[in-house]
Image (cartoon, rainbow, N blue to C red; front, side, top):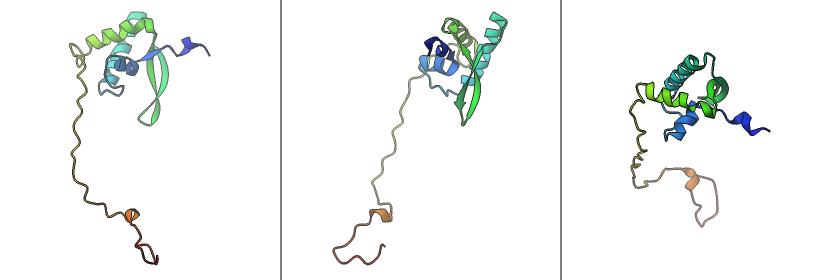
Length: 119
């Protein structure tokens, strides 16, 4: 298999390179801006690939590694990402509570007497 066939990059992969999650909420609008810039620059459609997103295979635009300037221009042009550095991931602490028992019958332990039936 030729490694060059899989060298195209999607907006989700570009977002991961920038330190954001691939399913970032502004990813789809950013991809539309990138496709618009690509059409204006090259006068043709960007490449497409199918990715499994939200339970369905959906077409997404793909770009050559030499065309990442399109994605950078889209990042600079798009309003929600202009002058924005990715925020560092903040982990919220999970609330801790004392275990009060679940009432689960699977935690039943038999007594020393003869086993009659399961509670």
